[in-house]
Length: 423
Image (cartoon, rainbow, N blue to C red; front, side, top):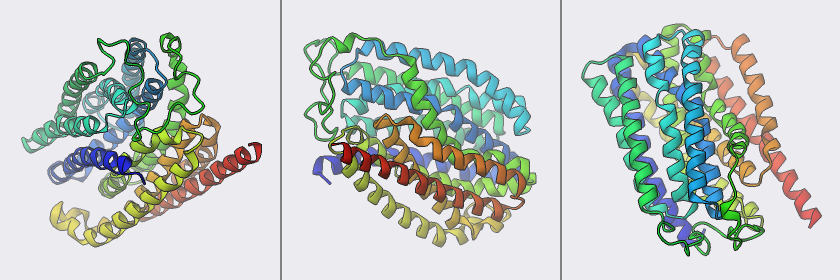
């Protein structure tokens, strides 16, 4: 791996680590002070937020890609505004849906999902930093956003607020973070006030070589073309797959388990989310290379190896940390302590799946996600008909995550073979 990539990976990992540690630190006081039933409601609404964050995740990949291609900054901000507005409207319907599907109250549902639209602004701003290869600044932004989104929740919970106040505090912090990220992205844009600055990412080894096979680079007229919202829609379809894969077991847990067991499962799912989000910097740094036809296959292979090593370490760490759960959180969660490694394994497998789906977006092979979607359909059916215990649901989630990775690897390998034959 080139030194520039290692350096970029280190800065983004540091920022992501701060954000993720704070996000999971939230779970400790919430699990202890809210109790299993209330914590189950709190956790399932956070999982719902992941689903409504899909357009934001897709928006970041599209903005980063279009920045590399030289698209107009004004056009991209217009795209961000449109996506944020659409998400804001959809989140209202989402709150009503969660009230019906997950048996949540109106207060916490609306308090949680009100934060979905600001996430789109945050993601758009981060896309500018990613596309221009400013990974040092991006790492700092990730850390600050993590502080602004998590610390208010911790304060609300420790201060005696219930799920509604905790989720509302998180949404307020997200709004502040959105304003901060937008300001940073605009004020630090190297092209602002200097039209001669075209694509600062070109020639930056941390970003890769976007000029390869890209007719937009070197063509100033391309930067004035409108960026259609359909780009975000297509990428959202693939991003939705990974978010549903990460969240579907937790989202459905309250419908197949008792309120108490769903709370136990929610705590175990913290290990899944931790193992999934911990190495997200790998995808952020390698994404531009995945879009380079010359280096895409090698980049995917290298990034996968990194994720496998991280996943093995996290799974082993979870196995050793499991017995500490009753001491750190509460004795009420003792039944799930021995399963912590399985939840961590599932999250590690899903991290690899996320990387593979990023390769699907980078290579513009959106149909590559169909096998994973098929596995998800099977998983939903099995959860509804078979899973009746915490252990059963955890095993089912692990098996389906593994099946998704293997099926998508096969599809991408066949695509690489076809491209090699064509050349």
